[in-house]
Length: 228
Image (cartoon, rainbow, N blue to C red; front, side):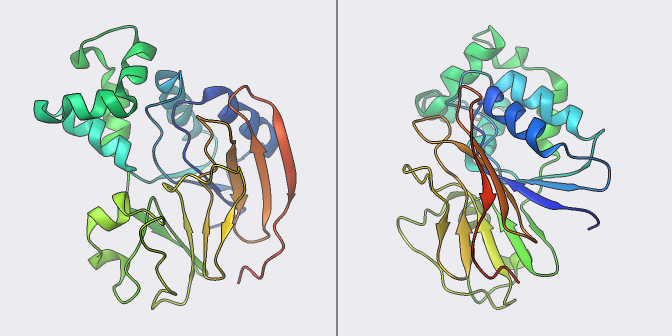
């Protein structure tokens, strides 16, 4: 990957926060943005977030990773009606409100295709990125998708990966709004849809930006850890 390698944590429909970070970062065609998943649900503008992410493909290299909320939304769209109640309870209702409809069939085709195009993980020379977790002794290509998308760091913090690369993860909301650092992994889900913020993290330098759900830029600094 050329240029900057910037990961963005769980957006959860928070368009104002996303726009503030993009304005601060100013990604260009040499940069790679790795989106850690959970673009949808809970926040008030999933529809706007997906529009913005689709547009981002014209500005930079984009690597969107599928989160558990994104997966659940796709399941419902694909006809798994038994998951509808679960999805609505865990933020899907806010998603449908953002589309101004109660009918899943009304979700724009381009949004469905974007979610369908998402990947399960991303690797660079010194880092790897998943939505939720990983298995220490398995290559990412052989890792169970449930671990990649659903496993919480509250249940288990995995040890160093066999690749010896640093893990950069989302999914487990850090409700204090601070990046979680465990030496061999970082979690940058900083609870944007709640009382925390959305975090963007430049993997090579440790530079990071944070904005709250109203669009207020809270922090722009460097994380003081050895990243490579």
